[in-house]
Length: 153
Image (cartoon, rainbow, N blue to C red; front, top):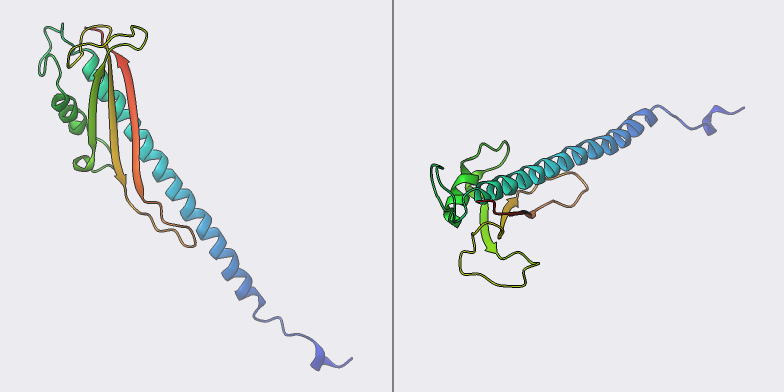
């Protein structure tokens, strides 16, 4: 048999390794980016719950609590931004607090609507930074989370 017609396989391992590593690293960086997204969303939902808990115990009839009684939107924002969050730039958090009458009452109330039984909604937004993963579109945008609770005092 003539050996001149056989293919040379000496460079095959390098090409297979390059293709496999490219795919593996793309999946690895995608998993890291997904973990960062989930961590940021979890932190934002925690921040929203933290703010709404602060507001529900500082309604129009609160007494004996230090700081912001009854709570104003600026008090809730300052409280949320003072919490120690890992991986979040607290200066970029936007905290919006709104008070409303309970939906089943069908009535409206005077501003700021912070009597016991009324609702408070805290909405937290954060500009999620871009994370570059090879061959994957960059993930950039604004993440949001909100929490609504009933004012207790």
